[in-house]
Length: 400
Image (cartoon, rainbow, N blue to C red):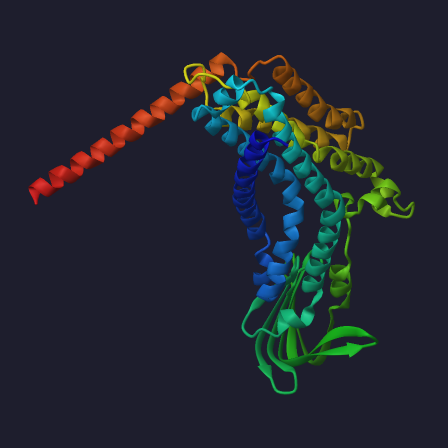
């Protein structure tokens, strides 16, 4: 590899790492916030929460990597063009391959990395994540040992413990059960404990009452000395881990079990998931080609209508949207599988045509003018706002 090629690859790689870290941090934060109820609702420790949060990363890496790469390539080439470095490379008689080769090597490495994560790491991380969530929701003891908290066990079932007493006993037990349609049950017991009967956990309540109310308004009150509230059905259901096609390994998707109920009901979802995994890793190379077609040529500043970075990201977003659209439709319509593979192939062919023919891929002139006018109006509005605030500050000082 030539010195110039190593120089381009090094610059692009540094920007790629920076863009990848920041983009991952933003997307990861939005995904983690959706899991915060794992701690607030089920009473799990922060360690479990962070473990679940870490297991989310493999699922977003294949999506974020191509966008980090297009930002890195477009930004690197744009800065090199602004510093007249691309013009110097062309004037020295170097072929366009001098710029294309280091970028495509970096894109190939990013594609291999995405493929390994998508097909090797992500399925196991998803399975572990589902197991942790199921385990936390099924842990009845974790739910009830916290004093003074009102917990939702499942839809229609709520539990509150007033205090913990010696010998693992519980005080002030309140249970609201509306799971049965048309009947609302409210249990209150002074004391109780969690015991095992026949290998099943039972909430044994002592010295309490049961309020039973129907939709017709009939109310009955039953006093009891001891009452066993069976929670095993809920715990068994919560502890079961249901794996969707996207949670299965690639080897399993290629040869699913005939006894798999999900596969029996929706076999097309398994084929669609395979198509998505075998096509998603190519977007790093597709986006790199788009960035090269947009910013890989030396050009005068007067020729540039829109910043190459904006152009490259806009085109990449459109291409990726087409890919997501095809993948979502392929679950129901098998013919969309051709589009899943066709989108990256067609986008690459178009970008390669621009590169080979020494043309620059740009947004339509109308779009470019609209974006330029919008940027100009925003800039003028911002300057006017700053001027207005500065005048107010000056007048306020004069009055004082």
